[in-house]
Image (cartoon, rainbow, N blue to C red; front, side):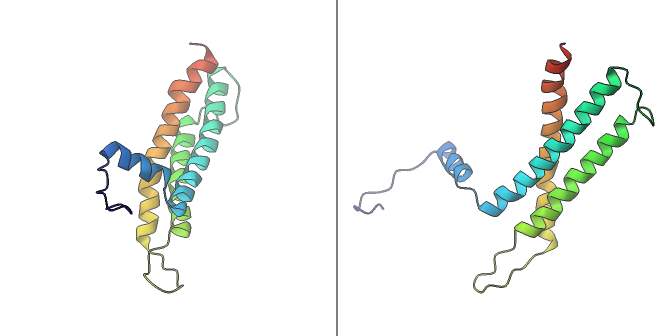
Length: 134
């Protein structure tokens, strides 16, 4: 019921999801944003390294793209997990005590996986061809 006594309008699933997206809790936004910032920064470094190798630049150590890619994924997942553990405390009901658990870290880990993948796909499949000119 609304304030005037009329029944509330039923929202579609799309309207509900859009409203949830616009009003996301701040800790969740911070956790996702931290994973996104680390993924984009590391992805840009990887893209620069990849372009340098393909251009024929002589880099000490040779072609270490696979090792760099593995390190990139591990760092993004670790940072996403740790930052989420720090900024997303569990609800406690009443009181001011902050409670953290491994579940918060697991949430960050599982949220960082698609972020890592999507950033790599965007950089290597969308941005790289624009820079190379293919």
